[in-house]
Length: 118
Image (tube, rainbow, N blue to C red; front, side, top):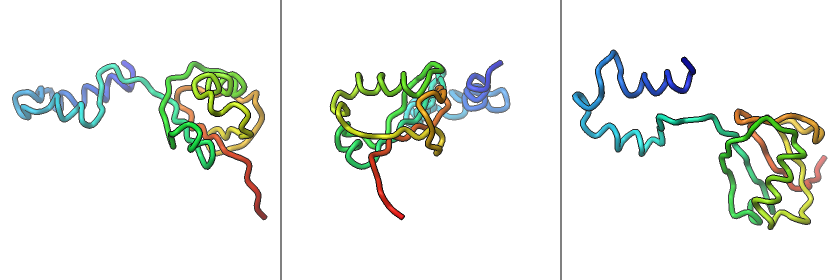
């Protein structure tokens, strides 16, 4: 049994008792909490600075197959054409690296504009 299914079972049937008898509003509450029976892990993609302005987003979640950062970059450029021509780096799990690194649906991805400092 996978972890997502087990967590759904824990929420929907604590101690073996279904919520409808004990908590009549449970479907609405679970929807409000954004709990889904079909839950799948999703990568978190964060946009900073001019990239957040260009996309109109500070963060989004996306289901990703395992792929290289270079492939993800192309996917994001297709999804957000306003990123075309913008210079940015991609950090994976808070680490900068090259475009050959792999990302998946459990990864935190940050698009970082050029920055300077000392």
